Image (cartoon, rainbow, N blue to C red):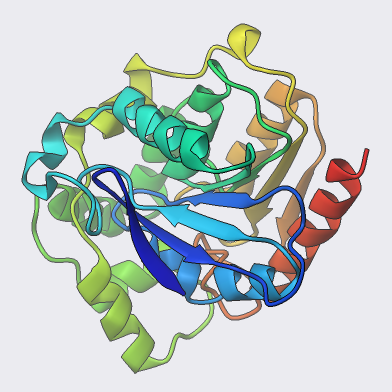
Length: 268
C-alpha cells in the first residue's frame, strides 16, 4: 500500500503484482472517516483481483488539505476533489462510493462520465432527511451521539459499533476505528439533507451497481431501494451486515459481487 499526494489530497494506492485491468478503481469514503477505511480489506483484495486501486481522503479528512477548515467544505468541494484525482489518473477510473461517498459520486456524474459506478449503502438521491427522521425514532441515542461527533466531540465504541456494524468486532479493531473517526462538515451534511441533491436529468448514463446492508441503521434497505428505483436498477441487499460493508466481517461476498459486476460491465 502506497500513500501519495495528488496536490494537497491524500491518496492511497495499491497495485496488482501482475498485469492490471485496463480500468482502475477509485474509492470514495463516507462521512466521519477517510481513505483508510478502504485499505483494511478492499484495496489489497481488489489488487489481487487485478485492479489498480486508489482511495482519496476528501478535503478536511485524513491527511488531506486543511483539516482545520473542515466545516467550510461542501459536497461540491468533495466532488471537485474526486474530479481532481480522477483527472490525474492515466485512465478514467470506475468509481466506488460508500455512504456520503456515494452522494459525491452521484453529484460527480452530473459533470463527468465514468465507465462504471458502485453505490454502497449510499445516501439516496432524495437526501438524508428520511433516514434522519427514521433514526430519530429507531435509535435516538445513536442520532444524538452522531450529532456530538459532528460537533467535534468523541464517539464511544458502542455508538460507533451501532452506526457501522451488525456483527461483533474485535476490541482492538474497534479502538483503531474509533481513533481514526473524525468530525464531518456541517455544510456537507446539510447539502446531503436538503441543499445540493443530485439532479438525475443531468447525470451521465453510467452503469450503476447499488448495494445495501440488511441491518444498516444509517441507510436502511428501504433507502437503498429508493436509490435503485430512482435510477431504474435492481438493488442487492446483503444479509447479516451493517453500514460499513467494506469493514464488517463477511465483506468478501460484497467485494466478489463488485468484482464480478465490474468484469462484466467493463468488458461490454
